[in-house]
Image 1 (spheres, rainbow, N blue to C red):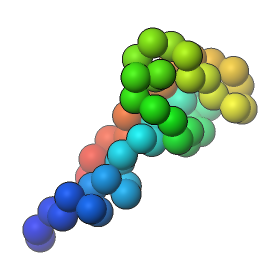
Image 2 (cartoon, rainbow, N blue to C red; image 1 turned 90 degrees about the vertical axis):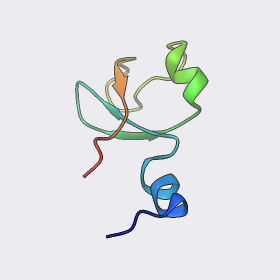
Image 3 (cartoon, rainbow, N blue to C red; image 1 turned 120 degrees about the horizontal axis):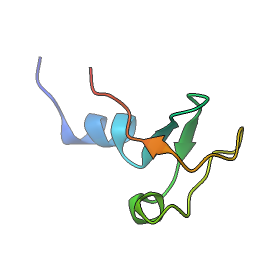
Image 4 (cartoon, rainbow, N blue to C red; image 1 turned 120 degrees about the vertical axis):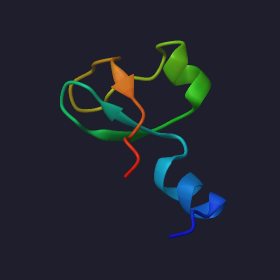
Length: 53
């Protein structure tokens, strides 16, 4: 199956998953790398990118 840039951006672009409570947060990549983005649910700053299927 072909991968489209628009679909990849929609599913994985600017989305992060909390490592503690698995909540999905949208935000800027640079803020996530600088630890300025935090989870709304638990307040953790430990975030990762979603795993591609």
